[in-house]
Length: 118
Image (cartoon, rainbow, N blue to C red; front, side):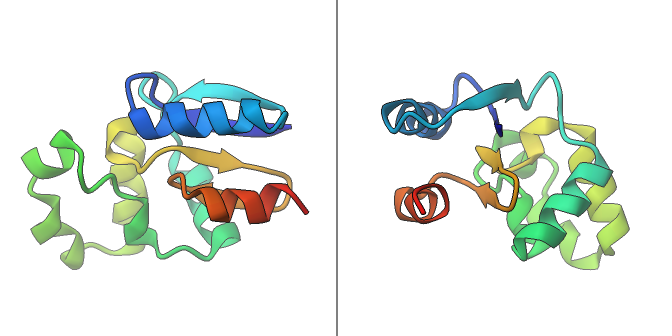
C-alpha cells in the first residue's frame, strides 16, 4: 500500500491525491503537519530515493523563510538537517509518496506515472 504524506491545504497535495484516485492507485493518507516524519524516516527515504537531502526542504514554505534556512543549511551536517526536518512537518517538501520500492517527493505527473504505471 502506498503512503501519501501531505497537507490538506496544499494545492499540489490535492492534485497528487486526485491523480492517484483518478488512476485507481490505492493509498493511505498521513497528515504531515500532525504526524511529521521522523529523522529516521527521512534518512531512509532520502537513501532509498537518491534525492539530495537539501531537496527535502519545503523552500517555498513560510517557516523555511522565517527561519532563514537558505543561509543556514549550508553550514549544517546531515544529522543536523535530518533532526531539523523532523521538528516540523511544514519544513518538509510535500507531497511524499512512499511505495514498496520507490519514494516520490513533490508531485510531477510524469515521474509519478513512470513509478506507478509499470
